[in-house]
Image 1 (cartoon, helix red, strand yellow):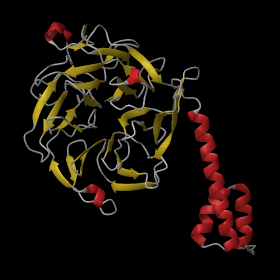
Image 2: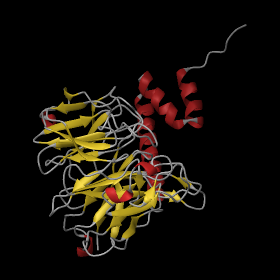
Image 3: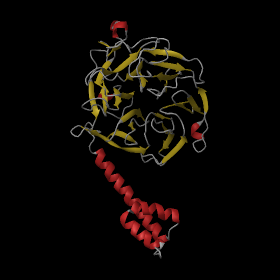
Length: 401
C-alpha cells in the first residue's frame, strides 16, 4: 500500500489551524522559512497577550486596601523563600522542585526580565539568605554557600558549609535568615504531625550557626514547624510563625505568631498549643504555664509562613512597623482558610489585631484556590514582593494613593 506523502508546508498549515502554539515550537525546531518565522513571532506575541489577559483577570480577583496595586514581578516555578541583595537581585528557593533561582530587573521598568537557574538537583532548597555578597541555600540536611554570587550568576559554584541537619523530609524544608548577631538561623521541624523526641533536642527547634558553618546551637525549643521569621526593627527580638498540629478538628489548634526574647525559651510543642490547649497525646506530661505564650494566635490551619515588619515609607503611616504574614492556606480543614496576606499589629498594649491585607487567591464559594502566598519581602522602594508557589509567580504590591 502506497503512503500519501505530506509535505512540511502542508503539515504546518494543518498543525497551525489546530495547535498554533505547538506548531510554533516545531517551526523553530525545523528551521522554518522567513514567513513561518513571522508567523511564529506573531503566535508568540498572541500567546504573551493571552497570558497577560489571563493574569490580569486573576489579579483582578484579589482584594487590596484602597490605593494599593498588585502586579506580577516575575515568573518562578514553585516560588518559595526569597532574599534580596543590595543591588536588587532577587534569589528564590523552592520546595517541590530542585532548583534555586536569581531574577533581575535589568531595565528598571519594575518587572524582572532576567532569570538564572543557579543550581538544580538539590534536595528541597526552600531557604535562601544573602550576606556580604554571598548566597546561602538550605536543603533538608545541608547549608550551601555560593560565594560572590552576583559576579557569578552565569557560572555559579557552591560549597557545603554544614551537612549535619536531620535528613527527615517531613517538615524538613527550611526557611533561613541572618539575624542582627550575624548568625544564620535555621529551623528544624518536627519529623511528624505530633511526636516527642526528648533524646533529639534538635527537632522542633530553631538553631543558629556561624556563617562558616561552625558553632551550631539550639536557640528556641518547642517549635513545630516555622517557615518564616524576622526581627523586630527596634527590640531585635525574633518573631516567627509556627504551623499548628493537624487532626484535632477544623478549629483547633490555632497556628501561632511567636516572639523569642532570649535564647533557650520553649514554645510548647508537642505538649501545648496556642498557649492554653493541652495536646491529647502529650499534654499530660507538661503544664502549659511552663511555656512562652504566643504573641498572637492566628487562624486554625492557615499555615502561616513568611513574615516581615513593614519598615519602609511608601505605604501609609498606619502600616509602618506592622507585621505582615503570608498564609499559605489549609489542607486538612472541611472549609478552606488562609490563602491571604494578614497584618498583625506591632503593639505592647493589649491583644495585637489580626486583619486581612490581601485575599482573593481562594474562591470561598467553590473552595478552589489559584494561588498560595509563601513569603513576603520589601524592596528598596518600599514595595512588597510576595512569592506564590502554586501560581509560580512573584507579585509586587505598591501604593499609588
